[in-house]
Length: 274
Image 1 (tube, one colour):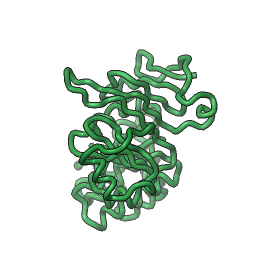
Image 2 (cartoon, one colour):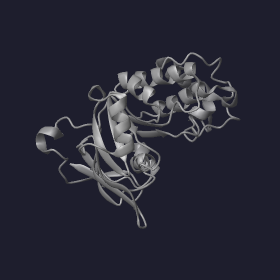
Image 3 (tube, one colour):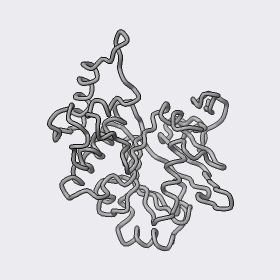
Image 4 (cartoon, one colour):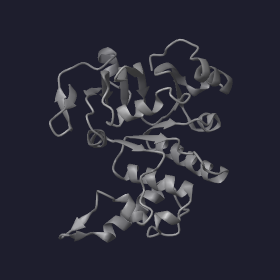
């Protein structure tokens, strides 16, 4: 049993077989990409990308500017439907035609700009577009209690109050709120685009700890980063892109910074199967 997208963009069942046959189907990675390509006119931004993203692990997606990283995560997030190839979610084939379809599956993307509203407080940002109501009025008590619960579970203790304006938060605190918002809506995969960019040492450490806690809760994390120190600190797996192609992917223990830089700059090495 697999799925495709219905008229509303939600994933609908259809018959198919997940990659790898019956044995792999019993316990597939959370997300599997097979032969994903994306064309913008004559420009081929992605070329037959195969990638597995397991649950409960941090997968770091690295590559130089223009390597195709952003295009790939936007394909996963439903912003850029692939020109060809297949996406499997929990072993079932899906077609992501919109960000809403990806969100309904449990895919949350935290972009570099975080998409937070500075003039709203933490609770209002956490529930923006998903406000809880009771008898036709906003259920402020429930939203506040749930916000506190999620922040506590993620060990986010640096904010003074959940009613603090987001505009008053530090970069690391803002990143934590954006991630907590994704987790609160039952996400199974959190994609993070350059989560430590422009952060200081202390704030970077806080964000990396948060990423580790997400994985420890069984959530898959896909991180784009140019900072190899961060990558080798937090990642379980590494996936290297070069000119739209995934050139290698595997456990972080199989790589060091020298090899990673070589792959990023030259694309040397055999193409991986994800």
